[in-house]
Length: 343
Image (cartoon, rainbow, N blue to C red):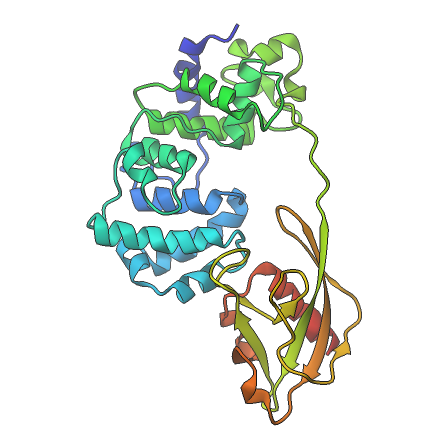
């Protein structure tokens, strides 16, 4: 049976010795800046630590406070975010910064309830900020914590349906003191010791309290429901050069997939998109492939040159050597590389 009283007592000393050195973490005993905690948690949604770290450093160097970020334009934020994926996060990041700056005097609310009222802040993010930045005894449950809790309590029901149960069990472990350190300790434990495959039980500070280890099923948990196969969508991207050698880009609508981002004009994979001009298009060899969270995408790339009517095309013309300055998502960067390799 899991000894809930001993989990924090054993885990916190381990964390004091083994804590990961991450760019958004404050030094031991130092004040945790809510802005840096919030920014890191938004970036880490659906993103790994190695992928998020350089973006975090770039953002905090360019916008060191929430007021600086609020004063930036959405275009600037989207360009800086490009490549990190899940672009609704960037739009909500900008909205949230503005809300904190304009409605809260540049100070983040210090309770879960107050944080939940901010744009783009959900239950997990609110709990993480409340615990790490303000020391509130909030229960922080990410994928790493779900795995640790499933093993500690030998929970055999599969994810994602068992998430509410795992959260309730995690709440029984959350201490009232050092809640922020405890939350980060659980994350570190899952990331470095209680790993998805081949957990390092011999190094685990709470192994004696782990019901899954006692039963010899730790590598089998957490169980997961079978995933449905992702569908494949297909479309066409149009690489159009004008007589001056610039490439046509256009902005996607604010709402929906890749909302507000720049794109090489494309059609087919979403409704309402069409070729930018009636020109002599030629098909480039090969295909661009990209996977989103819910579907695979295959794009054929057509290349063309605009004539005298090039100014009628909807969008902006960008010199090839300035494409890096645009808010191009990863799939469109693949299109650019493909076109440059074959034109």
